[in-house]
Length: 145
Length: 386
Image 1 (cartoon, each protein chain N blue to C red):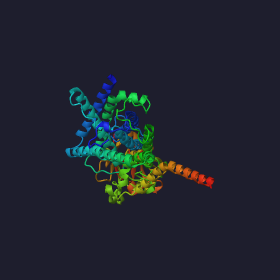
Image 2 (cartoon, rainbow over the protein chains, first blue to last red):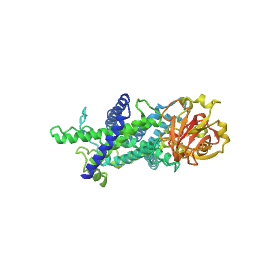
Image 3 (cartoon, rainbow over the protein chains, first blue to last red):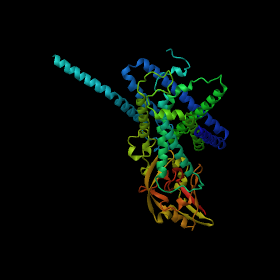
Image 4 (tube, helix red, strand yellow):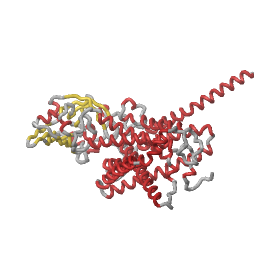
């Protein structure tokens, strides 16, 4: 318990130091902008993103057949989270006419290739099963003939 | 079950939303935050004009590695944070214990510390990610704010770990499929197992890194489809700030350009041709940015030490001035240990080509193990303060 209390004290001190740095080095308008971004980030995640994921979960659990739920979940985690990390480059929001070395890739094509590779890798076991199944049924038909 | 408008914790029934999952993802998230914090402190210190302990000039690739790690661990943290927050989402809907004042206070304090941690964590990753692609849709100073909020994030993380320490210890020591700390309603099998969810999270984190780290790891440039820079540019090196945005095109190409070197009342004035006539040295040094991109180049030019000897300057910090009309890094301080290092050059060519204007023509500073923003371009004056 003593270790935990010491850690709580230390963490509080470190956090208060950060708050002091934040408040003491910028003017009011800058601080207001920080506050807006602080709140906007939480709302974007807690309301928008979480809401979308909960909705996808509900829809997926009702509409998707059991066999597709696992690959769909994996696809959602991998493609979804990596896409969130790629938002600034996908939108090319920081692109500048005077600097051709910045954001110099075709990120949309990159995203499509990435998504196709992930979906392809997830579809592979299904294709293998389908191929084996159809091969077996072909053999069965031949045996019967 | 009928779907409620505002859910309560018991409405979340997936057994994937478990402390056994949250602690494992949280452990790696904490490691990423820790590395980000330490490497961020290194960068902040390296950019300080005054350094009680001189920032080392060796190894020359040190800053490249620490800042590459900074952005890499920050990127890896994004899938980790999203899955971690997903795994603890039911907590968000917990009702406060209104009838017990003591418990209510503790509950409120814990909630407040988590609120600060979540807000600061999201803020750090969002602003860092946007800064790496030079996207600044805000009114605050990025550097000052990112630095201050880093302390808030790490402080609240330490408090969070301390509060949760017993449960963290317990679940990490046990098997991931144990149910001891689960909510009673978290019994429904998910579409994936807990191990499957964790493996998928590590995979997403790894892909996020590989898809962006090519900006600093040349080997991965072709597969880094989300890399902010592909690695190309004048003389094969990308640029961060162009001559146009620094408003130096006219002054840098003017025939009246001179490099002034001053110490006390002694000074010399050199044209670019004068600089080319001095002994030339070549060094292979990286240019590395806090935004996470870096590239190695072969720089050729005059040793800083040789230039300072022209005015017989003793050891001391050097004030380096750029032709830029404004900007926070128009004037930088080159500490004595960098100024006296044989590898520190006033570069005139890069990879065998005349320095491009966007790389700092007529001449630029290049020193080992130094933040990119301090590798001043379009240098016009050096003054020694002994």
